[in-house]
Image 1 (cartoon, rainbow, N blue to C red):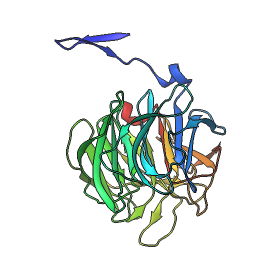
Image 2: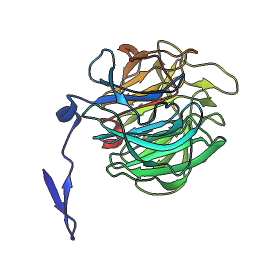
Image 3: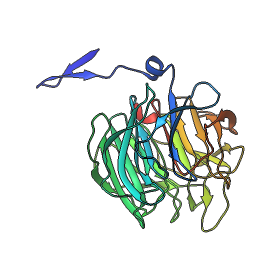
Length: 313
């Protein structure tokens, strides 16, 4: 255990790693639909094989929620239970298995919001309230409690793909424009424009990253366009447009993505019906996705998270 003295008191330094606690980076897929599934699945990202049931969210039904994680916790915020849009936030301890626990509430009641962040701070971006919103709010992942206002996105929209390094949260893909935006995680404020996605107005992509590169999977061009099998990437620390990476095995939208330092994994999605397929790519290469395994159920309209993503530093 490491400690530092800040002039007033001693602070413990987190010296854990996914390898120590879970045998490798563990990816979680939380909630989903069609229907309103409260299932949480997990898999070791460094291997291949089928996902395993982790537990359930607090409510009986959940889809269209935003997910994020630290090295120790996976967090799920907002969503839709089939009748009501939600403001609830749940969390699990990633190294264990079991049902989620109540964390607090978002500042808004929202579905189709997206999550991401660093090892310390988690951000929820956009969503439907039921109209599209540009709200960004945040939590301190290691604590529990209600979210706090962070600022606003440029785009009033939902269903962003979100990825991060330890400094910058990047999000793109919505029904109003093809812009990619970013915020500095440790501060408060509104987003700035980073670049544009390759296919312009593309909503419902999924994203994951290591500390260097963000990967966007699938999506649907707008207005009224095609479901995509495209995989595209960007360098998180720089500004600019995405670059073609390769293809998914099937054109899909609204699946769940998560990552380790080397691999990005994408599970489920609508193609147009829901699928249980999990695929992966090596983040620092380019090329088409490869088969990983299958989820415990076919589902979409949800996100993934992991205890080894790029925002953890």
